[in-house]
Image (cartoon, rainbow, N blue to C red; front, top):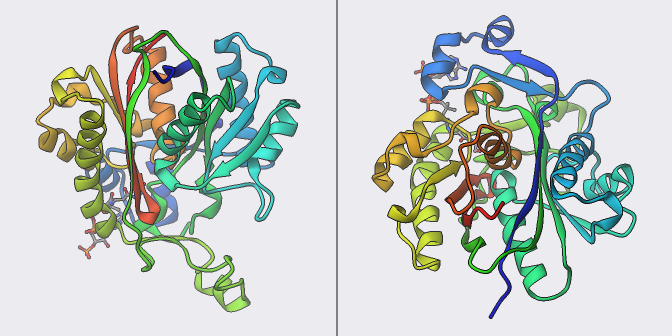
Length: 329
Ligand code: UT7
């Protein structure tokens, strides 16, 4: 029998700088009303000058370790889910290892965009079940604000920065991560990515002038994918655990757009009250979003021991995935 693996410590962090819809009204032709009705977002947080993704990750990690009753030296392995590393070529998880003082941990970055936290938890669980490690610090952290074209109202108003961390360990039998589903529908078109600055198209002066060095999204294409991916991933993860939607107590969806969450609720035939939503405060924080929502749901007392949760995400790639978790704390 495989070990049961679950979250024994959870921590979140959101940077202090608040960017409201009113702030966006000063920058582009938009309105608070448009943003609220089309997305549900009211404000987001941005990393302050001098803060990189690793700094957000370290703050969340400290909170998670405290919650787990551990010190940095105890950590055996770090997985950092991010698509916004501090530097290119050096993994941001190594920066986290150094800044946290997790001197005994090996570390790597996992790039699966907004599905990153779910992918990282699934990978971490298998690494513990294989006997390779006894604990894994899974972090999802993003500073998407640094990649935004502040003149692009179609993309930029959606995103924000944040971090979440979870300590994975063996838990009581029958608790923890029950099952998961990970999916990829790879696309070669530029539905959601930064076109320039990778190895195919290095940075040029022209690319900077054209704004091609910033995040660009075809919102409608992502929307169409998301409304199918959220219910499909959730159902597939439930099926893998021989469960149905009736077994769920709470769904923690990727916090991208209220309309996407409402559509998923309808397709899954679940009431909206079963979906935890905090996108009004943070916008879309990419990989950090599901963790940040889980952290706040726990802080607000919405999750108790034995509750069955579905964590579900989708994002660039296109990637998607879901994880069914029986809360063990
Ligand atoms: O983690 C995954 C990340 N991405 C997502 O989840 C994004 C998924 N997509 C979405 O959330 C939505 O597609 C958006 C919120 C991005 C856009 O909403 P929409 O209802 O699909 O709007 P649209 O793109 O069809 O645009 C409708 C109109 C357009 O004007 P016209 O052509 O009808 O005159 C846009 O130019 O709204 C305009 N528009 C805006 N107006 C005011 C687009 N962005 C804005 C804006 N403020 N910020």
